[in-house]
Length: 354
Image 1: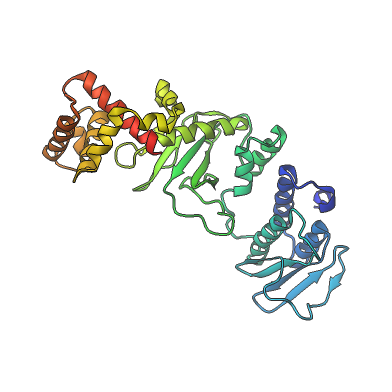
Image 2: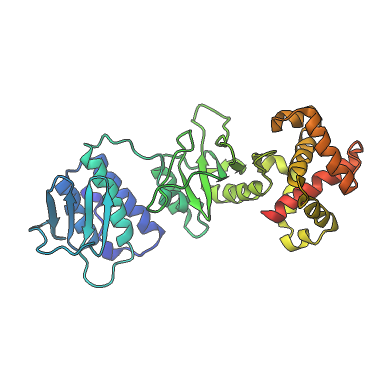
């Protein structure tokens, strides 16, 4: 533990420093640090007094040199730099402007305080969003990404796939903490889209992405060495644009083939296509969206019965909707060429709307 003690003034506020702070507090918990040892270590790391007021009424404060301090004579409410866990409040007493990493130090101190309060037996979260963000970042050095992967329990060099999930429940505040996707995978949230890291056990070659609940859509990037997770994440975001909750809730980038090139077309170019304008006009009719959904399911499944099964409708109802859409849009859906035109138009509409 002594070997991991870092002086915050010697660190730059960059990704490497963030990884070190996270690893530092993880090591304290792993080695069974006591409550007093945790506060002393936090004060030494931040180079300013640190404290912890517990729910049972006890409190402790330490100076950076490890000297115990008395209770605050008049603690401001709320404390200027504090974090609340489920076992009280932790804080840093830095005069003036906070240091660049104070927010991260407080967050990790609060997480460690909760673990210490539960005797180290509290179930750990499957991953930390800050580490996931480092794995996916285009700005960090390769060695930083590899270290973040190892702290997440993932193996650099082994195949990893990233899933982009839309429609997940909001992650708990603060900082949208990592949550399980059902298979224990670490994740974070980027621009409203959950990024899920998926790596199979060493004794398995196959793996799948998270199974979407109703209303969720999932794009899955290609499998590649974990150090190239950023590329898989970019592919997952592309695949997500091809998804549809009703007819194609899960799309794999590798399965798109040359269709993936359509994602490079500007949205304005797509919207200016005459067939898309016709589709949008049809969608505005009463029942138009439902008819287009039936048409999309028919094009994807290749049969009315397959589309009816996917949409949980009677096949005659699907037939009526498909016929109505085909007639209005001028497509003979018995003709493979017109079916392709319909499929392409609906795909381009999805991309334009995404």
